[in-house]
Image (cartoon, rainbow, N blue to C red; front, side, top):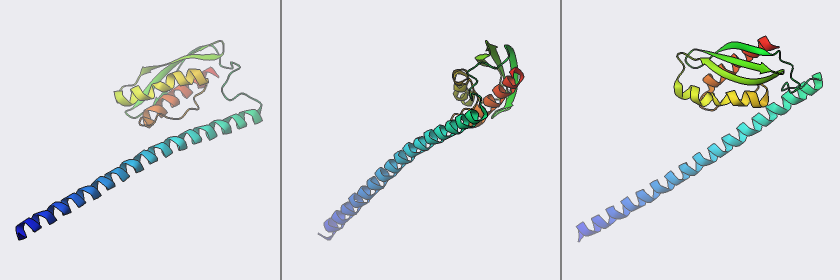
Length: 158
C-alpha cells in the first residue's frame, strides 16, 4: 500500500515537472518569436529613418541622393574593400551616367556562405543607384566590404 502511494506521488511529481517544463518552453518560444518580430520592425524603422535623413540632406544641398540624374562618368571602374576574410574587389560599369552593373571580381579568403548572402547587395546598388544601403544581417563584414569596394569604384566615376 505504501509503495503504491509512493508511486502515485512520484508519477504526480513527474507529471507536474513536465507541465512546468512545457510551459517554460512555450514561453521561451513565444519570447523568441516576439524578439525576432521586434528586431525586424526596428531594422525596418532604422532603414526608413536613415533613408529619410539622406533624402533630407540631399534636398537641402540641392542634389539628388541616389544620383538619378546620371552624374557618374561613363566607363568601367574597380574598387576594393575589406570583408570578413580579407580583400574584396568589385567592378562597376557606368553607362549614361548611371550604375548599370556591379560585380565581384575577387574575394580571396572570404567565406563563401557570407559572401553569397552579401552578394544580394550588388543588385540593390544598381537598383538604388547608391551604396547607401544596410548590410545584410548575418553577413555584416562581407556586406560592408562589398559596399566599401563599390564606393571605392564609384569614387573614380565621380
